[in-house]
Length: 266
Image (cartoon, rainbow, N blue to C red):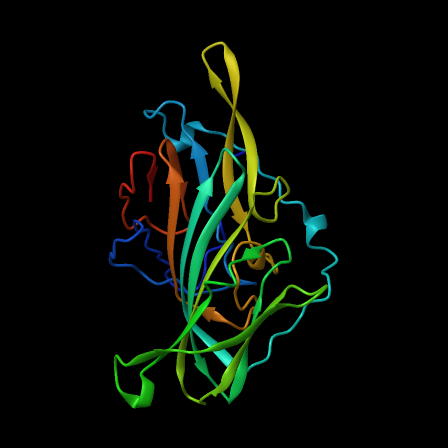
């Protein structure tokens, strides 16, 4: 049976894909990190460039046992509210791994000296290079300043990343967290996973791999730190960097494809 199509949202959904280091125009998608449209990015190994997507018949079963019953979830404080995400993910198909970066712009609803985000315990976060910037400092447009971090904690037995600061965030202030991360590609349908399918090539059936995401109900945190709750539906800018010879499918129209280097494109 063909690949399952993602749910259709009430709003028009469009996401831009861009090349690393190149700023291009992008379209917004209204989505939440937990109960949003499945961020379905299927990346198919294409053996023959002339074959169309319709010629591939893929069976992808979602293992409902992975989501039922739901495990108790860690609710985040409401001191900070996300406004948008800029997400970049690069695949390493050979090693079944990925790495990337996410910039989360947020507003401070009430004074706080910490940022709480969902991050699965298997997700590695670069705490040394984690950076938080305050924008519009002193009410001046374009003025920004680095916020000094006191410490970064991973909460034991909970999928939480907590960043503590020396000074409180000002209520109404605009802040941006910049976080680098890396993780493993799974074989079960959680987060970013690998699936396989067979395609007829002459007299033989050849097995191929594809990579896809499944983020509901609270699996986005397996791939990147985020506000992984259904209340937070915000725009995303997404860049997928993949090896050449792979194609990217998304639940919205492709904005653009560009070459990164001799081996990768986005």
